[in-house]
Length: 228
Length: 382
Image 1 (tube, rainbow over the protein chains, first blue to last red):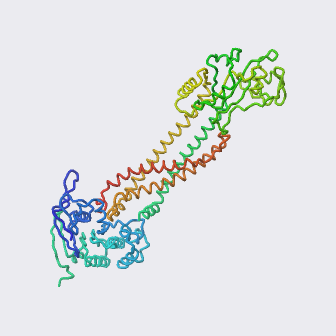
Image 2 (cartoon, helix red, strand yellow):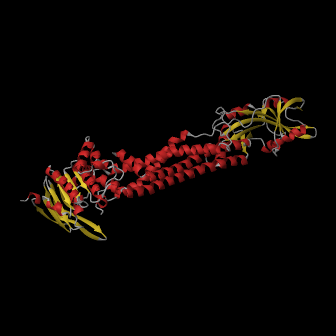
């Protein structure tokens, strides 16, 4: 279970205090495909970073499976990210000097997982990247790069997947491919949280959080695919 | 993964890394070139200055040095065993001792200086440089240029001195000094000829500068030491030769220190500038690795290991190039007789430690920038 209690994040900019996230409370159970949506600058990415243990909240608590993330030491929080979190970044941030196989395998290499190559090949096949494994990121289209970024986040089988606009640069067919992956991860009992504007993703969300200037309105819904 | 990232990074930015390696190699090569050249230049200058002649003499404290300069009959004589006894005091800075018995003699209406000499080695003296004054075989004479003319003698000819015949082993080129009028003999021959067995009237030597400090401090140390060991003797320095040698040594050493500071500064600048640029260039990688659970120690390790690796490779290549250049360029001009001008491999480990150490320290400045990066700002950047 992921729990946010009265989480606030304040920034100082040009002498002004900006409330990126304001007193947000939210619960996301295992198996959820949760979507955070709202206008640009509403605090979606900031929220994902805080949930991922990358950004200290100014106030409030974030717990994951009853562990208060920001009560952990820095080393323990690094370990939490290594073992439990998979990030998909909006700009992908693939390492340019690694092949696609090496980029996908980054999380496995950091965790010293022994069956890395098999997992990489399997996931690459599911995301239609098999014939690109020995290429470098700059040899791929934007859509392919995004699928690599998703594969890199999922290959370590993390308990928590945080995806920032995971379908933002994809056509319908490729977006469906990603969506299927995220849904199957959630179906396996993991938590998937995606920040998105994409209605296709919103339609399949089990949990939704609408952010307006850092304030959230949460809702639980049956995905449209499950509605009669 | 750690090593793989470093290797891939090196290959990915090969142009920049090649430039960094090349620059560092050039800096190290320059340093090693000057280090080696200085070493052999000091040795060369030592030999040149030594060949100018011995630069100090010792006479009894009661003696007047003017009598020594003018070779008068008032010179005070003392046992020739004194030289060996003084040479045994290793705390004295003198080397290459020479026992001398000098006395004016008349040849027709001309005056020459009969000079018996015998080199005396210190117990720790090596064969490396050798005494600048070579011993004279008994029964032979070495003639100053003017003395040879007065005696009408040539090399391999014979001369008669105080009724005894000697073979002329060598005629010295004109010096423009009193030495042109000297007739050098083996000390024992001179003592017999003058009827003064076992006696000398001056001890010559060469003042060594290894104790360090200013020339005046070196002289003072030598005076004090001699006063303690042999209070009945005094020493006099030939200032021009001492100063020439001192200045040549000081100049090369200071040049070396200056260059060392320059090399250290350049190494710091090169690594700080390229390191800061690299941290900026690799900020996304930093963010991604942090998101995958890497700590700052891991990230800093990536930069430091790479910097130390590049600087180590540059130190070795620079050392070889600089050493080879010093051998190739200076061998034809340096005056070294006993030690070959060669690459000084014993300097490789300290050079390696120096360059890698400076590079690692310099890399700490970009590391400050690295830990101050905001990974969230980088990763959320649109």
